[in-house]
Length: 367
Image (tube, rainbow, N blue to C red; front, side):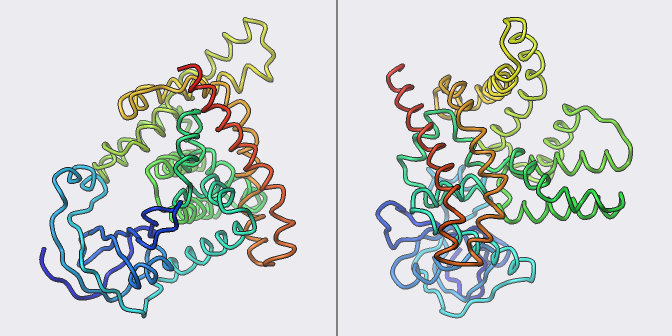
């Protein structure tokens, strides 16, 4: 605690305090001498910080103080030990390591490519593709939460699967050991690109364990892989035990592993076509797996999600699969042709958004 003047590194991407009003206030988390502090910046300092991303460093000065008692537990789960006030930020920044520079270059290119879309659609697109929901308006966040679709903007196993599917044509041509190293590198890159959120940590860790077992010729059940993944991550970072995203991701995965097959058989016995039985079983299993965390944290459940997921997930999956390369391409070629390239994504994102809004209204009427 006390005064500080020295080099500080951004731990997370800066967030506008009120994205809807485009307020100039910016919230950021810095690491100072190995400890994390949260700061709310205004004026020129806020404008300078807002242009930068996680991993980039700057010389700043400010006053360190303890976190308020009401926020202490929540900040502790994020490894934040204090807050910064009266912050003054220099104008010269360091771009960080080569890996940080490469990752942030891709993030900026994706943001530029997504800017070919209207502001709200761009915010939702980045949420679907890399889990960046910083600029999503509150109404959008509420619609996705109330309609049972909030998992779509949290990067998880589905995104990991699509990234590996996109890299598969190259990976499958490699020798086993080279393929193992390349696959783990892709997983590490995507984890850093999505800022290592709890859900993506769980998904990437499970994928890494699965790839290792496959390369070694071991047959391990999915539930065992999930248990190893959860136990290992909690040992590494015990604070994950208080992260809602970690609960939701682990619960949904457990539901999918344990309940999908029995539910599909039950639906098939009701003479339901497999085209409907499989997605409905998958959605129901995930909803059951996340029911307890949803109730404990938000005090409510979203049964409408059983229906909204059937309509939103297939389209969102297409956006996740082809959106990343299309957005990068649109970012490279810029305006004009870039607008044409992103046009299909515009329709896909709007479809998902409409499903969320309609689902929210149906849930409200039902309540």
